[in-house]
Image (cartoon, rainbow, N blue to C red; front, side, top):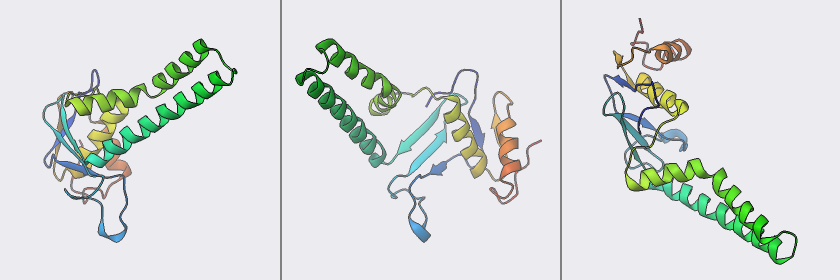
Length: 166
């Protein structure tokens, strides 16, 4: 991922951050061969290397394909029944494509292996993972530690209470 304009990625003393949205009961959900695993490694202030379990994008691609097929089928059925014109059917399908454009763009970048432009929310997510995994320090090219300070205040035991932000 490429940093949002005017933002920088944090780099912590333990830079490889793991995340998983799936829950697996008492055994945990973090590990290299665990379904749904996501790995993040800052390469520079502007780039983070992301490695995701193939199931993540397989599910995203499947959901996109099913959604678009449903929109096409519904629009064509309405056209065939004479409820809408051909022009309206085309506009309906174009609207469906625009509604999933952000997901489509993300899938395209990950399938090509190109840098996806991060939103501010994604920047906050990645930087909070760096703070979570840090044990002693984090650095930031822009010296913007507001997120780190907020994270440490809200989750004082996340790093075993070792990291301080001054």
